[in-house]
Length: 55
Image (cartoon, rainbow, N blue to C red; front, side, top):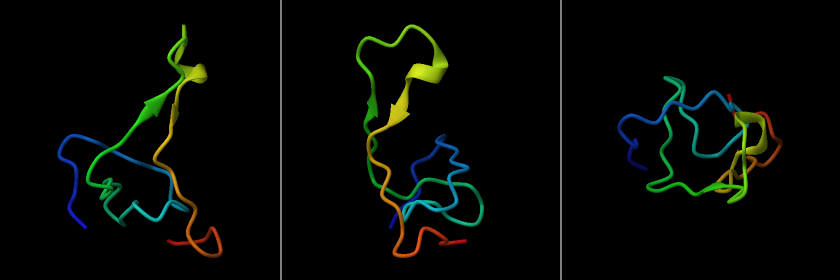
């Protein structure tokens, strides 16, 4: 997998997270098209690793 430059990720139980807090998904989709504040957005690309304890 390749790091997406400029994308920092702290979701340690995502299969695309690496130990340097980088995202290795290749591309991401960030959702809620009608968001009006940060708390209403989310990464649609998130996938939990097998036991949700990757790192």
